[in-house]
Length: 491
Image (tube, rainbow, N blue to C red; front, top):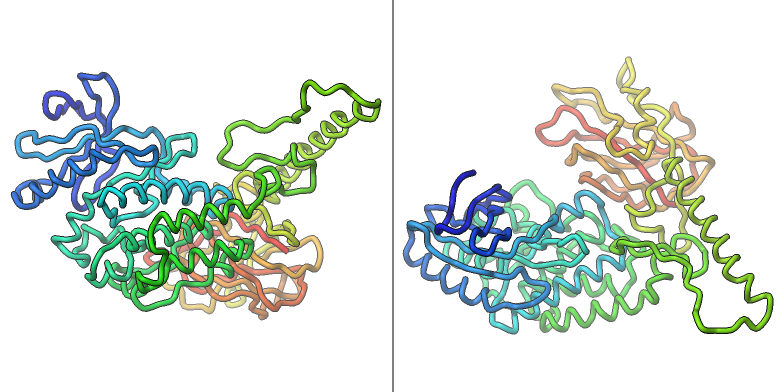
């Protein structure tokens, strides 16, 4: 980019921009390292009152030294351009993780939430309330260590321009606390609420209050109870679900008394999951062979205690039995992956008492159409490849009750949930069942929902069926087609 700030920081790449600032990856010529450089937009830098508050906030944030907070290195003024220099975190933000992977395993959710909560609790102890807690402001360093960023800056902006200014806090509306949305007092409980929203999203893959506009979403935060977490994620432990519900209380006084209290409760929830090897196992194998949590980088092998003499020949058989079990587990893993049942490393394991049901895309259902609806592409919806898809026709106006892709189970089964992944989020759909691949499909087995990148439909009160239908009743806003990239099911 050939631009140098303060004769020291060489701008290399724009990595993000918003209503108040732009963030660049830069090269620190003095210390010969990469840094993140945030530069305020000119219309803020020209306001002297704001600049003074900005400098004060920067000094306060620079005093925060915590492993789960991005470190502030420097601040300055380059020809009237205000800037702050942060440590550069090589990796993606938490929003990108959720968008790519969907709902995360329970243990990983709690471990990430604890890291975020501890960073926020430390900031609160230093007199700072974040006010903009969201996955986009949590950076992952590649080893699943979470680092919270953007402390203090959003607080100064919000106090002065209010929460209804588009381009300032519009992007945070999905995580905004009711008192913040209504212009009330901001306290540490404001961050507790926002972290509760982040927890909900990590568990379900969706925010509790989606919407078309900032005002619509803000009013939902103020007035509407959040959707049931247990309906969206049935394997959530009741204690964890209760903790999220408490964090999302409308009144600050009904939430946790402090971020430390919230962290303590999440720690207790993590302890209730039991030993790590047992908590995330997807099949019954010896505990030493259970697959590691997704956050781990290296698989566990068989651990044979050292320094103990064999007491009988039978003890020599134990390692062989464990190795045989491990080979069987590995073989089953690859067999499952090849047949499209699902990637055990990229989606939450089924809850106890449930099992994965392999669905096959067998056609399309378009009762008001005459020439099919991309029937031959139906297998793409269950081929295990998220880059392929079944799609609707392209409609100038979608004036029919709906269209859908037909899915066949190996035998009649009563499903408990169906998860739909798409690269055209925003369409409305429901799950139906029927007697054959040629319909009719009339039994609605799930509520109608707006489908995000990855959406779980909870099935209730249905009879066993062999054929199911993802029935699309409305296309995404502004789009003439909808895609179903992958469908998975649990029975």
